[in-house]
Image (cartoon, rainbow, N blue to C red; front, side, top):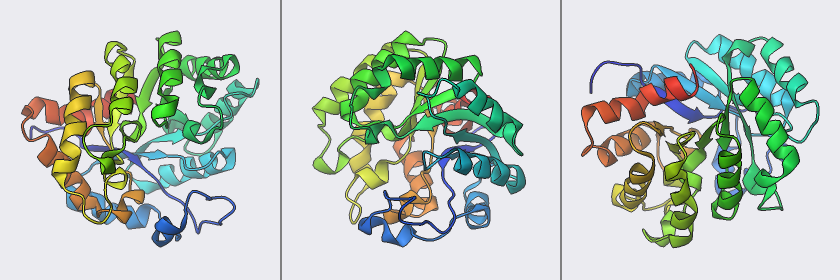
Amino acid sequence: MSSGLVVDAHHHFWPQPKPELYPWLTEPLAGLRRPFGPDDLRPLLEAAGVDRTVLVQTRSSLDESIDLLATAAGSGFVAGVVAWVDLTDPAVRRAIARLRAAPGGERLVGIRHQAHDEADAGWLARAEVHQGLAAVAEAGLAYDLLVRTPQLPAAVAAARALPSLRFVIDHLAKPGIAAGPEDLDWAAGMMPFADLPNVSCKLSGMVTEADWAGWQPADLQPYVDRVYSWFGEDRLLYGSDWPVCLVAADYGRVMDTLHQLLSGRSEEARRKVFGANAMRIYSL
């Protein structure tokens, strides 16, 4: 692959997780109930040849976001942070300003909310949410879409309503990879994004949506090919989803697998997916 920065556009850190703060760390994820930080990830990045990363929030917490910005500032490799703010709060602009004023605030590059945990599948289509997303756009930030198939229509509506906002779909919107290559409901929900140039997609989180015990690259190939046909080489980003990926694969295997899945693409396309697109989309 030609020279250029390699960027992991999606990973997490957390302290010793308290159950009440990290309810999503359920029993199948029990092995992740320990602290993960820069010193754990740094040697893995060096071994994989990754230069920069994007650190992503895990909780609906402004305090966590402030902590992540400070951690990023001292890490030496985190170039951007996707934080959290309450999009429904009329004071969302002040919350974004508070993050920017915090230590490491210059690394704020995006906002995310766990939309797939909202009881209302149409949460992203609400007027008050659109007002919050407009504030994200005004701040020059990206917005990460953490959604599953039921939330895709509302996500499409939001992307159409806010063409100036850079949206990034996390984890291919979590298709049912373990069930096989024909998740037709997911495909129908994702296809409209092909015509929305303000929406990109992370090639991340796939191994945890497959059969954790016995997944193979061939299980992921149909999904990578589909999103490639919709988003093309300019709107796809590599993300490890470390440390969540550890339930199914170590860091090296996640990255090597994506290299294998993209081996038929051009050198220039792979350069974009593994770094250049993240640099541009997140303004790193």
